[in-house]
Length: 165
Image (cartoon, rainbow, N blue to C red; front, top):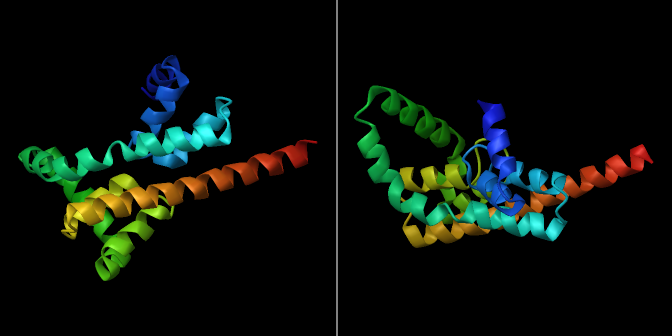
């Protein structure tokens, strides 16, 4: 299955593949920026395509999360899955409870597992942060996370070049 998805992504024009990976819940910027660089894109192009792809999901996800999860919770499997995702996000989101929009920004800006735009949308919904505050906090967090991931990739590439001579 993963092989099929990989072939499907690589069959897309590279720009679209990078944006699609950035929009996915698990990979987001942590997957799309290294993918873009491995496809031979420059740092600026990798950054902007990844950030754009990740930002594209924020507004629709903020509007649609509650109604979609409410509809899907009627099914036992979906209900259990959403309970697991929401509880996991709630456990990792102490900073959001304490600082609300600023905490949401910091939560999204630190590119670790279980953080990012998708988790930020879930946290904003769980903690009832108003749309305008949540939207701008998540977008700003995406930009900062993009800078961090791009910097780490650049550091890794320069280290690899230094080692391999």
